[in-house]
Amino acid sequence: MDIVLIVKSIIIVTIFAVSLGIAAYETYFERVIAAFIQDRVGPDRAGPFGILQPLADGGKLFFKEDFVPTLADKWLFILGPSISMLTALMSSAVLPFGDTLNIKGQLIDVQGMDVNIGILWVFGIVSLGVYGILIGGWASNNKYSLFGAIRAASQNISYELAMGMSLLAVILVSESLSIKAIVQSQHGINWHIFHQPLGFMLFVTCALAECNRTPFDLPESENELVAGYHTEYGSMKLGLYLFSEYINMFISSAVIASLYFGGYNYPGIDVVHDFLIKQTNDVTGHNIATGIGILVFFLKTFFFIFVFIWVRWTLPRFKYDQLMNLAWKWMLPLSVANLIIEAAAELTPMPFLASWVGLGILFLAYIIFRPLFLKRKLKQNLQ
Amino acid sequence: MQYLELLKNMSLVQWAFYFLSVTTLFGALGAVMSKNTIHSVLYLVLTFFSISGIYIMLNAQFLAAVNIIVYAGAIMVLFVFAIMFLHLKGDHHGFDNTIFVSALTAVGILGVILTLAIKKAEHFRVDVNNFNPKIGLIENLGDVLYKKYLLPFELVSILFLIAMVGAVLLAKKEK
Image (cartoon, rainbow over all chains, first blue to last red; front, side):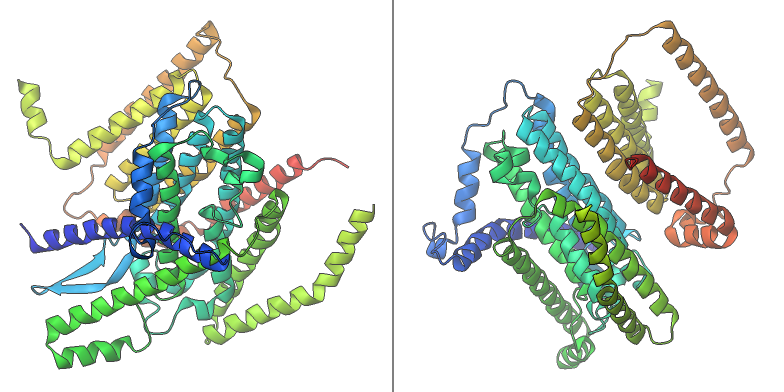
């Protein structure tokens, strides 16, 4: 068989296994960090430091009674969690985890596939992800599940718009839809976060909302909706829902890392690459440099996973009207403004300076017009 | 036996195409025939998905992605949302005469269009050797849209804007 095919399949299987493994250990670290923030001990029974806790959880979920409510739509009830899991796992196919590996003279990307619609693929899969929740919530034939499902749908649609708009600014600057090309355009320390801090903030907020994480976890807010869309679920079907949330978290952290934090790029990547090639030979040096890049990528991803968990245990949940106001009245206009500023900055000879000047002008305009806006709102409230 | 030989000789691409065609038709039939509105919508999503697969086979990746994002991801979610929210049970009248006549007309028109399309396709057979396989990729699409068809493209976007403003106006309560 072709060596490229073999290496490629090994890479794909590894990516699959790694995303499952990371998702499993996210649950552990979520509990550890929550315990730290709330000054508790956290999981400490299964293995040293409770490190086998995900296995124990998985075992527990597997051995529970697998059951379908009488009045539920049986096939859709099963289809819901399956779709959630499927869509969560599909999006990692286009993420570049590292640069190329040199194996027997062939350069092989450390990536499932490098399609030229890369980021649109992720976006499409994410927009399909909501079907899992919608179908599951509806099929349960339970009011609270249905409310959860409807909330999830409206929230995802609302935040997808702002997400797409802030994404457009990145695509505009890097001139490609392929995530590999986007990462390559941020070579060294030329990361997009420095060009588009506003776009980055919008994107992270939208990613939180798309993953249904706190403060956007209204679909499963337990004080209003029992448990939201998975009220009727138990056993491994519930496990799939919960697990797909953690996989989504990993994927969105990886996407944020590659869109705004340069993916596998780090300052001085060329120096390290040349140094390693000089120390060893062309092939080994290149492969070790790629390995360092993969490590850097995972460090960035882990940092964002940590941010996701940190936010969850720090911020309280939004009210529903606040959520919608934030999406439609703040994030969407801001992301359009961000897109216009970045597009205009691209046309000037100094895009970096121009984008910061543009953002400064936007901020100034906000400060100047804020009193007027508030006055009008006050008048409306008085009437 | 002859058919079995045919099946054996089918290439991978042909298998993929027939699989996608069957799922498309299955989804479309399911959307029309199922009694439950939600099931109908979900079948329609399946149809969109398989049509996207066919787009990918035609090397039109951008179209496939946009089809999934816009139709399967946004419009159909809104459909499901509205159906769930309004609790539409789906009024099933069964097949009366009007439905029969309109279905017949639709099938007739579709038949005419398909025959014409097939006739035309035979006329302009694609030159396999000189065909540019990158024609469906986004770079080429953007080039054509923003250079050759700039005016229609801009007009369409203005139309969209007008439709959006109209929708907002309709949704707003009169004071």
